[in-house]
Image (cartoon, rainbow, N blue to C red; front, side, top):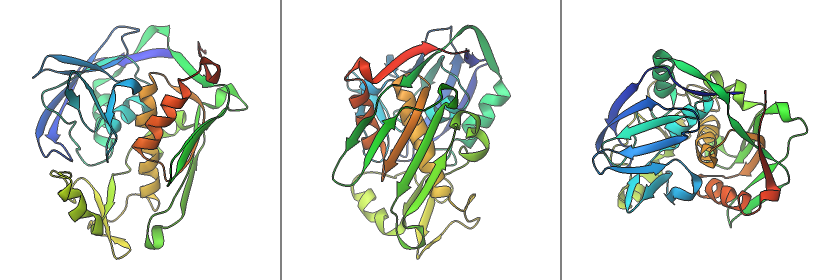
Length: 285
């Protein structure tokens, strides 16, 4: 598979979900082998979009360097992963990526309008070679090798929410070909009884029914309802895709998890990179 960047620059603006602060974001094309980087233009600090630059996973994935951070990178990275973009420069003038509508839909549509540019050289992929697992007291995630290298990334999740959303599962095969239609529109979500706690933690200052699903008494408060019957689980997949792209590569393998979140996924990447026997990095046609 060839490397991809953008054909033209594209810009977004909006408020951050947790900070409530307005930010302007511009994504610029980059040469082959540049990778994905964030640049805080207000601080003149460049932060690679890599797993070892993650500094917090509390209700979002935040990356940083030299005490400067960019918060809530997972939805934008998920969009880039879904579009196979592996080289770009992301300029941002504040501390948090705009939440927009709570999904990656607007990112995807805007990037597609800007255009994708296939680059001359192939991109490296990371193939899982042996099982790797991380677990904590409430959940786990693991990588399992695929039987066929051509399968791409498979995701198999089980979660336990409340009410009629309890014990939901989702299985997505070869996500590389299903992202735009199946995952990109799924919005972030929360439960009504959690709101006061999150506010007490200095979070969701920019949250509203315009950018998040809020569940109360077993149904969404949002007038338009859900975009998919299992939108909550699809958004879990969206988050996993974004968090896994911090590996620096598209992944061939199966990600399986129970009650996963940003913390579990980032720690699974840490386990993966502890040994080069766990994976191989190579190119495929």
